[in-house]
Length: 232
Image 1: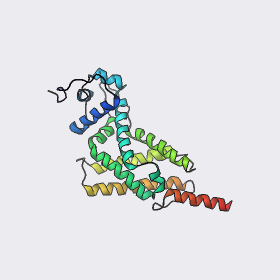
Image 2: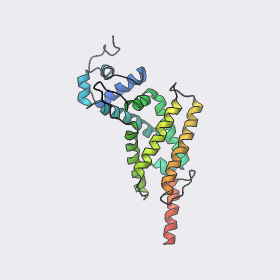
Image 3: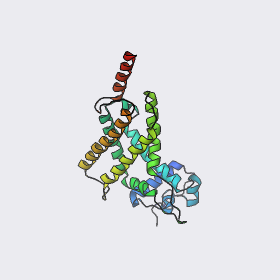
Image 4: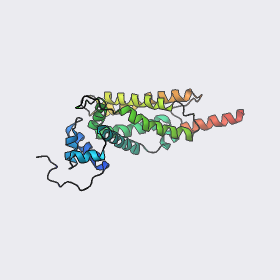
């Protein structure tokens, strides 16, 4: 008998509650859940699930957003990236990201596999973990760039590059076990931070801004602004 059958079905259910149920199923059973499993955990029928989500991709996107929000909340506000030295800020952000992945490693694997899921009608599920994450990163980076008077041209490319590197390295870090040793987590944060900084540094250099990973970017930009005013 399914473990959720002892509870009565809820009269109403939200998208957020269904995402909660999906994450519980994935955490417990692995990265290949069925929509039947998720509906059963949420104590609803599959037709009711599909009244809240248009299709699997819709649900997968919400699960991805939940994971991204969890990491972003733990990392702090956008000011983290401009008031702290980049190396320190990236360490903080990536540590929070690693913690969120370790809390739900099966969810990360599920999202990574979702883009190649073959459906019963032979079509391939159109969900791209990198695209979903890059879109969120791009919007956040654009807001930061505009607030600092940095030309946002090319930010979409930067976002895709950063997300691609981090997702690929995450899979390497997790390995087959999905629960790397603590020293491997520290190595992951350090290595990922250096690669991400290299991409950000290249983006800034194309705009004539030479930044130091141990100096807050805001301080660097203020110095550039003062230099421009003096030259003018």
